[in-house]
Image (tube, rainbow, N blue to C red; front, side):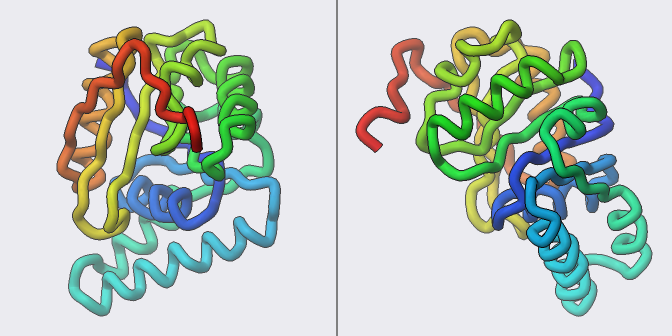
Length: 195
């Protein structure tokens, strides 16, 4: 099985920052990327506040907060995130053109064997995988609400997604405290059509 030590998240909106919170809390080195330094600062503040809320509820400890924030880094380019990450997660806006651009960059700059994932619910993972040279490493990771507390993660595999990729993502999902469900995307999927 592929070993995941560092998780890179591209896009620091609500979903991206929630995934970064979970990944850092689970002990992964976590790199959150956004082109906007202001959004990255806001995300770091939100993550710290999320820990404070969890501590107040007895779900986390102050030590866990310190350790998690030490795991968290930020980046201003996709290329920078790709240098480190074993698992890259696209959490950008639900726009086909944006996601195709992100996956083009993933394919160009990711470490050999890195898993390329998207949290998209509207674009076919097979369409994203088709523009890469490593379709076996491409997968969907849908974080269903509530993203931070409980909930589940759907691993969306295409006909080309390898078993090793699915297993590694399943391990990540469980470590993040999620119920893990594997979903098979049809070979002729048109998830993005008409949206």
